[in-house]
Image (cartoon, rainbow, N blue to C red):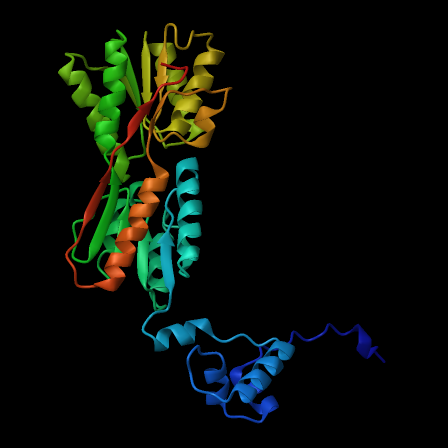
Length: 337
């Protein structure tokens, strides 16, 4: 005969308000009032219910309580390209700010083909709002999200739709500033490692480079389409530097620039003596002494604060007109330009 002690213990069921009510000999509504600030209930009865609830491990259903007040406090955050160190840091800080406001983010990977299915699933929940890292997300996903009537903040890509607010870096201006710094340094033979096609920031950043070069009477000598990654930046830089005599590599983000810097060093090139390399975003790694990368700062803290500000305004007035906040980037001179 099998030993009953060898059976795995059953997982205890979650304690409900009715369980506590039965144990305390009160109604279920009394349990609800015991955990509702300001609700009327005899002080002795409230204390008894709360003591029994603590002993039994009961916690009120915050989602149900929020829905009674018209808010779930759930915010879906479509996180986009989490391979990017910039996006990882952005989401980390955004989650912290949402938690401080008693908002509970539901993180959804919005990068690949599963994004459409994920959107359909998460919209079955009573969300207060959607926040998109739209700059690192395919346009089709952003468009899909904008059609559901849920308050939405798009960060990194401007979405022209009713009820959608936007926070976006002036990507083109940032690249114009960096390119002009390099032109003023006397650089003339420019290569460019672009971002992934279809991402919001890619076209704008290239447009800024082209505008500044055109103003100086210059044009690109070489271009590669990268993927915003160190590996893609390395491969692209290797191909360009072996095929062309370049004195500048401008990269669509810092990860690409770090890859390009690695390639240049392997080829024995003098950076910044004979070759300037510049990135975009100013991630923490860009400032490490081993890279000391000159770059364009894409202010994370300011962008996150503006997202939170727009979210609070939208929740306070769901019918208000859409707003767009543009963030000014700035050049950070270090040791590679």
